[in-house]
Image (cartoon, rainbow, N blue to C red):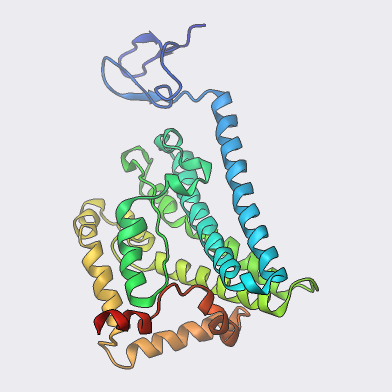
Length: 305
């Protein structure tokens, strides 16, 4: 069956039925090299939806299984608590990147479909710098591994600056959804949830708040920075984005080594007051924080002796 498309730029009529599914995601005129549309077979939408549902079920399974072992087996409490929080973190980060890709797709960048970004598969979002290097640096300082992720958007396909801003800022919808969902569980009268598990939910919500705030910071490499410069100037933003790693390291040094006495404590107190406003308990957060610690400062000190 022939699939002819007429280029609106040079009026060339060509049959594109011989192209593979991946090649048909974006169609360029072979004569004037202009993008003339996209052809995504309906069956491909169904395949992507199946991948999305499958990955959702994987996250639900990991969360449910770890929660079950946390509630029923004291011997596995530390391990199952870590798996629960880590799985929740992975799920929220995956949904965060999915929202970026989903809005990019809606607003003109069809390449995200071809790259598999709409599948909610965390492994599709892993990239060396964002996923391993920077989280590894944070891990060395605080003993907690916060995995990173990223989707690569072809900005030239996005329609305008407002659309680019929406794409960059849309990721935080994931953290908002997870925070409200966890708060609903905390405030619920579900009797089968133990006090220990509710404290686990408190620290899980706190981590989502941290991810939300971090992503909104105007620091190169983060969503807040990209959103701002999508409205101002992409070129200037790209120049400073190359300095993202040293800027983040400097930011961590300021926090860890308290280079500005009193300032870090003030920011921390403001943060604690903010989480109290939304219903989180500071004591429960700190009591369950140990489930996230893979290596602490005391352990690191053994290597320096």
